[in-house]
Length: 61
Image (cartoon, rainbow, N blue to C red; front, side, top):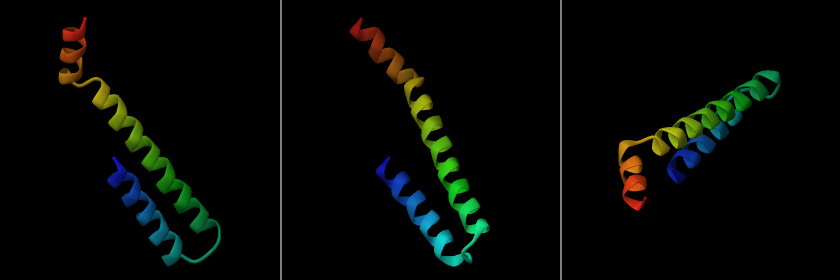
């Protein structure tokens, strides 16, 4: 999970440095942040709904 965050920050930083300053830069930066947030949410919900997690919960009950 730390690798995902590090990779996204690195990509957004590179895009921030390569592109010229202005509204394009701002748009790309927030686009990367939003896509990263979506990826994290999908990862969390997928991990929570995995079959292994359900079996562990049933075993505890």
